[in-house]
Amino acid sequence: MKFRSKSYWIKTDQNKIIISSIKNKYLKSLKKEGKTTGDLAREIGVCWKSAYNRLRELEKLCLASKNSNGLWKIITTTKEVIVL
Image (cartoon, rainbow, N blue to C red; front, side):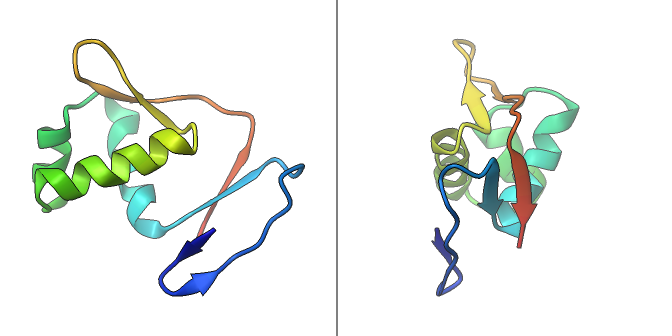
């Protein structure tokens, strides 16, 4: 995994996921209730496209998902989330 111009290596058999502090803000915001991309963007203070990109990255890590109503929600996981 790579962010902030640094590479972090972790074995796939470990039950850990490394995320940035920015993605952690999105997860904390989603813990309260399901929100739309626009709601999250306004809350965090970024444009909707930036918020959408971060949410898609969280979706690829199996930490968030979008339901049929357009609301993003957290997916519960057994993996440990490490915030750098």
